[in-house]
Amino acid sequence: MNTPALTLAEPTPGFRINALTGAATGSSRALSGPLSAEITAALHASGNGEVAVRSVDVNIPLLEKNDILAERNRGYFLGRGLAALNLVSSPGAGKTTLLERTLDEFGRATKCAVLVGDLETDNDGRRLSRPHAPVAQITTGTVCHLDAGMIARAAQSLDLDGVKILFIENVGNLVCPASFDLGEQARVVLLSTTEGEDKPLKYPPIFKSADLVLLTKVDVADVLGFKRDVAVENIRRIAPQARIIQLSSRTGEGLAEWYDYLRALAAQT
Ligand SMILES: Nc1nc2c(ncn2[C@@H]2O[C@H](COP(=O)(O)OP(=O)(O)O)[C@@H](O)[C@H]2O)c(=O)[nH]1
Ligand SMILES: [Mg+2]
Image 1: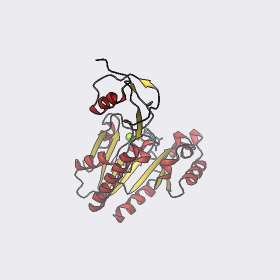
Image 2: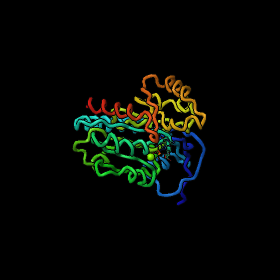
Image 3: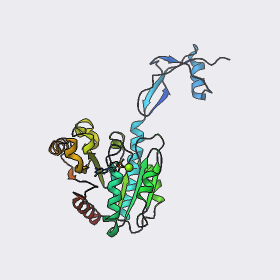
Image 4: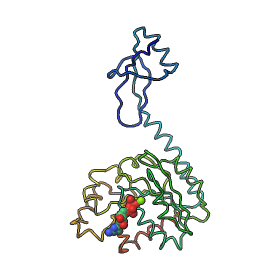
């Protein structure tokens, strides 16, 4: 028996599945491979070899599930007396470099741990590896953000005894991580001078969700023609709730303020 053509809705961006419904939508394309019992039954019922399908957006249930797991993570972290920070930025904004220096300086007196996410490689995990700080690398494959389930699993692999600060270096991306609460106490968004002053205006959701914005690589601002005051104004316009610290992991400018912020956060938990 020939496999009849199915009428499928055109794929749309985001997480989507196709589910059966009563009315045809979208254009046709042939579907190969074994048919599910549900589709086979619908084909028999249709009589003309066509069934209609409907796209169901499953973003909402996925995010609901993530939020539940994130709340669980938050309770777990608070129960252990540690503050989790979710560091988000474009690739190359200086997250790992800042964490390297933070572990070497601040991390000597206050025990820290790191979870670091990338699509591929454990390069950052190896860069951050220190005898005095547990580190685990999460490789996400094709996924453009960390989610609360990944954090829950990865946190189990770390010895968190005595840890006061858990840094989570998210996948480099100013878009996807905005929607995924990891159960952090604070979300830290990095904007580097190499990216231009306008990024808060172009990627508002991530900045709107920030507790702290770090303006990084200020040592090269002048040579790049980067206007710090314009960047700060843009951040304030989009994210009035966020504290702003300007720093350089290279020269050390602003790091004392960053360490004060971490100390205060650790003291609250
Ligand atoms: N000039 C300067 N370069 C920096 C600074 N921080 C990081 N970098 C450089 O920026 C590049 C990307 O840094 P990295 O920490 O890997 O960024 P990540 O992708 O956000 O983790 C590297 O070449 C770093 O040496 C800084 O404060 N000043
Ligand atoms: Mg990195």
